[in-house]
Image (cartoon, rainbow, N blue to C red; front, side, top):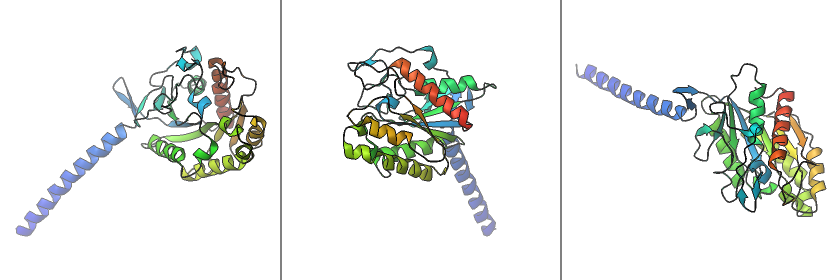
Length: 280
């Protein structure tokens, strides 16, 4: 009888532990889904937005103030376009996408919303839910994105959270390099550093052929813009596609893309994704 009593006690302890664990896990997974009108929708199509200020978004920012202009191509689509916030929770996406990521600068419009809207429009079944993961930091050089560095580790962490519950990282969208035009040494080593970054990200995100869509510079902070552009345009890695922002309209500062130009970049990125058949 005593033995049976011990078995019964162990059984009830197991049930209590299981219920607690199940409740904890279910609550955690729920935080990784988006709730709209009382129903959970899993974000399957995840895209990482990384780089520096033109990815973080300075469209419409003049003298440190964003004009707040949202053109139709960048309007929110609740329940269809989401962002992983700085608090690691999914929420409806709206400009500025990087407001709680690139916190030391004034953020305006970047290419992310135009990109996501273009993908949503392309879906004939109207079932796509796009999850954007903002990671870009203004003024960051390629060296700050090297493996083991603060920005690299933060990207990998945010990417890992974004796919918990079943999401899939469809691509990394990369727009960076303006900082590396200042110094000749940085510009000359850019290609090797960029190549290593893409390879390391694929390794650490456990996706050996993860698509990367990068933007070739429209501008630079220094005199070696063409050296960096040559490195970007000459990148030869499988599933790395480059779209070119050269010639697009710049803000009065001569460095950052205008709101209209950011729409163009976003749509070029979406076109590259759709052409490569890696969007789903």
